[in-house]
Image (cartoon, rainbow, N blue to C red; front, top):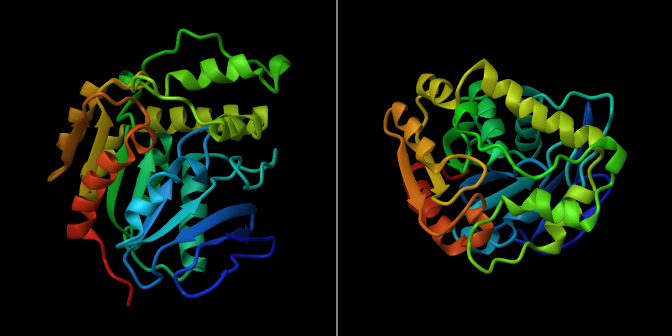
Length: 285
C-alpha cells in the first residue's frame, strides 16, 4: 500500500491497493481502494470518531467480488480537519459523491456503519443515480433509539483524552465477550480535534432531528439492508424493525454482537452484505 499527497497512486497492477488523498474544494479526503477495478463498486463509510481502518477486517472478505472504496470523512482519520468548514451530514455526503465521481464510479452500493449510515442515506437522497442500494450497519433510525452513555463526557479542557477516557468512550461500541479494542481505533479518536469530534456528532443528531431515516428511505425506494448487532449498547437493536417501513427492506439481527459487527465478527457481517450485493450490485461499464 502506498500513500501519495497529490492523489491516489496505484502500486502495481490494476487490482493493487490504492491509498491517497483527493483534494476537494473544501478539504482533502483520504481514500482507499481495493479489489478489481472493473467489479461492482462498494463504498464503505465509517462512523463517528472512526476511519477507513474500522473496515480493515471486512475488506479481504469483500474484494473477491467488489471494487471496495473507503473514505475518511472530513475531520476523521487522515482527511483534513479544518475548523472553518461544514461537518453537516449533507456536506459529508456531497464529498463522498465527489470522491466517487473523481474515481470514475457511476454506480455503487453504499454501506454505512453507525453514523456512516446517516451519511449514506444523505448521499442516496442527493445522488439517486449514483447509489443503487444501501446497507446500514447498526445505524440508529431515530434519536428515540439512542442509548445515553453513563460514562463521563470528554470536555475541551481534557483534550486530548487520556487512555482510560478513550477506552471508556469506545467501550460501548463493542459487546462481544473477550473482544479487545484495537489500538488503532483509539488512535483515530486521538487524532481528531475536539471541534471535529463534537461538531460531527452534533451533525448526526441534527440530521436525525429533522427527519427519521425510515421516513427518508421510504421516499427513496432504494433496496435496503439493515444489519444490527443484537447487543448494541448505543442504539436499541429492537429499533431495527423501524426500517421495515421502507418497502422491501431486509433486516438482520446478529446475536452475540454489539454496535460494531464489522469488527466483532467480520465473516458473519460480510456474509449478510454479500448476499445482498449479489442481487443489487451493478458492474462497471
